[in-house]
Length: 194
Image (cartoon, rainbow, N blue to C red):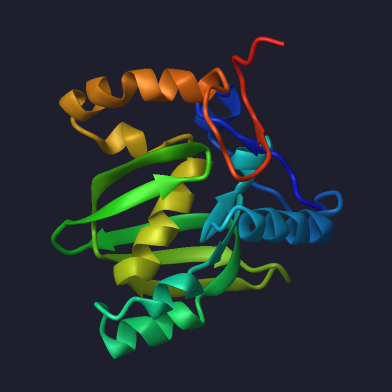
C-alpha cells in the first residue's frame, strides 16, 4: 500500500525515533508498504518518520545510482546491490575528509542542495529478520545511509546548510509545509488549510 509522505514542517520529522523489537505490530507489512511508497515516489531511501512513525526504521534501494557512469565500476557494483532494511541502526564511526554531494528528500520536494558528509561509516543495525549486522559503507552508499539515518535522529539535510542557504530556501520550505507545491506522489502537509 502506498502511504502519504509527510512534508517538511511536520513535528514527527523532528523526533528522535524509538527502537523497536521483532514483535513490532505488522512490521513485515510496514516494510513492504515503505518500499512500495519509496518506489512510487522514485526515491532511493525512506525512513519511518517520513510516513509519520517515530521509530528507528528505514529502507534503502540505491540501485538507481548504479547507472551513473561518472562512478567507478566498484562503486556502481556496490550500489547495484545496495537494497536493505535498517532497524535500530547506529553509526559507530565516521571517517575521512568530508565531500559534497547534491541531496534531495521526498519530504522536501523540489529542494536540492549540496551537503557535506564523511565518506566512510561503520554501522550496526538489524535487518528485517532481526539479524544483527556490522558493516563499513563508503561513497554514495555511506551518504544515502547517513541521510536516512539523520531522519531517525530528527535531522533533515536542510539542517546541514549554511545560514545563508537556509535563508534563501526559507520561503520554499514554508510553502512545502502549507502544501503550496506540486508533487508526483501522495503527501501529507502539516500546515495545509482545509
